[in-house]
Image 1 (cartoon, rainbow, N blue to C red):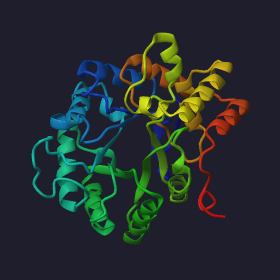
Image 2 (image 1 turned 180 degrees about the horizontal axis):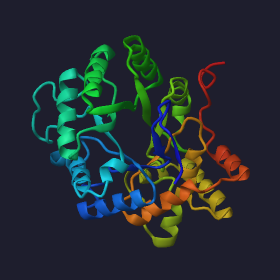
Image 3 (image 1 turned 90 degrees about the vertical axis):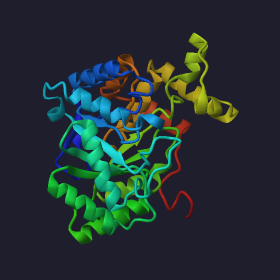
Image 4 (image 1 turned 60 degrees about the horizontal axis):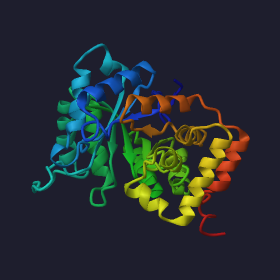
Length: 330
């Protein structure tokens, strides 16, 4: 496994991030524990979760699964850089939460971090991330709440997720004025097919020393060889992937992508991850394996070196928007 610094910090993290969103809803606890063990054995030390994972009436279930894994001992907790998130409403679906049980008020941040620590069976969170922007809470209040948690030793670093570029700037300018460290990471939707983050989010992150952690690196399976799988196994895509492929232009684009990689003997999913690892500012993509086999495929991508010919071919198929303001102005 290869490692890098998380943004401008001294913290070393693996270039793959183990995403745990499937733990509970799609992957049973025993299998989830096996995947985490395999990830740790492979040198992946960066695990990502969120308080709402588990979804619906099972919100918090994923953090509980991770906490039970930590409780097994064997230095599991000490070896892991643990990231979780706050923002979502933690009331079970179909029930009404009391006010102040979601978003980023100081009240909810304090409540949410204590609840996550209890489920995770740990006394600190390495990276506490804002799952979304809160348009109603000023950053002065947010940083005051986080500074208290840092002083208490409950949180070490703070990151964001799904922030636009101007909010990254606003958050870190406010933090600097208050003498806080500010955001050190940003999780954003970023992959070969969806490159809009290159316009402003990634440049803002680079300017502020914020590590970029792409989520959905295969764009929901669209970049994982979906057409090839249809042909070979008769397994048709479903959900948003099927909706995307229903567009003839998108299907032609994905076919060209798969043809390029087949020509060079590369697996689509591994190539898509390897491409992200070449991108400026990227710390490491989040991979969310449902099985041990999917984890091994992701690990192979770390050692995969894409040739200039392949990189040029990918750029031709998925050109991206270009930087701002040139992407929308002169």
